[in-house]
Image (cartoon, rainbow, N blue to C red; front, side, top):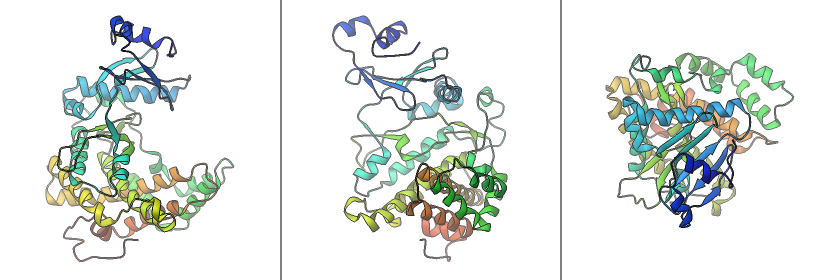
Length: 379
């Protein structure tokens, strides 16, 4: 069964999610918001409003990612260990396994955190960063072994992100792939030209600890914040698109927060060089209070000692460097020539790996005993 404008009302009626009287009264609407999947926004003007997602093609991988997303919503609604996560997700209504259909609450009067930051003309309230820390901490489990005993542990594949699989031999093979685009080849060559890059990549692969549910695709467009938020109030933030969730290292999600803030700065630095009138003004100084507030709140919720927090911060920084490599390859797909943004991203990644104490202090703005007297030009 494939959903369409013609049959979606019948489907929702059968599931008891709408009633015939609302249709007769004219209180029923459908909008097609399809992207990778068939997405329908139902009853945007009324309540309850639904987001209905269905895998279109006979694509086993897409069916699996939809199942994973549905599993995360099911856990939040049915597993005591994840009940706190419910406050950060759209409401879950239905997962139709046979027809690969997921029905969620359609959030209205919201905007993505990415749009909020760009429309806010470079303002980054620390309270938002603290709420992001609370959100991640609600589903992260840092105690080794605390998750394996739960039945939800068997619902995921426990795969490392693909960037952890980089090897020198594999990159050389990739470079010889005729299907690889020119910009991607330039990125691979830049990595191979720096032997210390490959040394760090090998070490990072050994640090991965699969011990918690992770979102796996943390980025500001996937956070939704209430449109009426003001900097002196509490934000209502939701996290969507759980299709890449898995059992993995919780610090991978943490690193993604740092990477997103640093990418805002990089984008602004490059944009201001070429299009100063069209670019949001972002300085490291304006971002650092948010990165610091995020980390401080996350450490509080994880209940780490100062020495544990320092160790976790160093590992998060290394993961941030790897997230930047991942971001670089995302930016060069289907492009003829590597952009300045891609090159700067790789350079920043290498700087983080080579000078961690300096990076923690000068880039993230987090002062520790080790970096208090170390300074350098972050660019």
